[in-house]
Image (tube, rainbow, N blue to C red; front, side, top):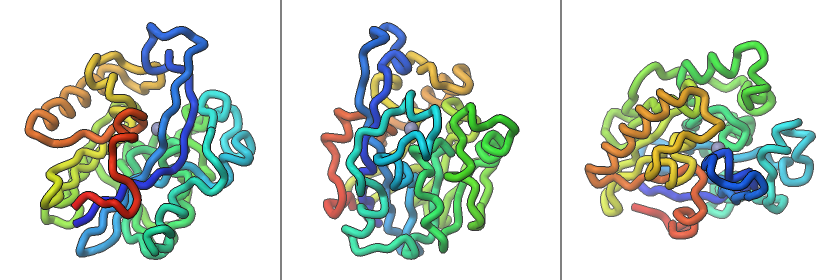
Length: 253
Ligand SMILES: [Zn+2]
């Protein structure tokens, strides 16, 4: 199995959302990404980034959320161009895993018409709840007609231990991580926004954009346990780590 990390642009946010000690005026840039896992039984995409119209019309797509997460990518920086560079069209994707249903993680879901979507049941419930837009769930992104395979616990996607989905609630009710076991590069945990920044894992400081701090603290403890066995933790939005990773055609194997 190969793992390709795909760039889906960048967002700017207040640093104090993640680290309350930061000045209110301080901002940080957050890379947005997607991971393509090329398994013998199918092409699997972990998260789909932001919708292609976001750089040109952030408020049109995101409404007020565009003031909290300011897109700073160029038009064309999204998962579909990353896949095209690898010779893949959206129809080549068999399975989409959504770490959660915020618009920087499921923004291109609509394009994967032939995929089955792996989403945690608690995440769907949160997205379907009345008033969920205020919590960052935009129906235009997540509410699609394609089949959903709802998870309620851990899931070994192809029953061979290569891709294992792991509930890691806290950032949102149904946040998922994915363990990807590669032959040469070892095991990776795609942690999504359970670990947006490396600093969150190192300091244990709970970001403000957290659904349930106690649940997140528990999930962070689980991630540390996983890391202690030699697994590489891939953070959801960590610039320093992102800059150090292989991307696009330069795959992990
Ligand atoms: Zn995010």
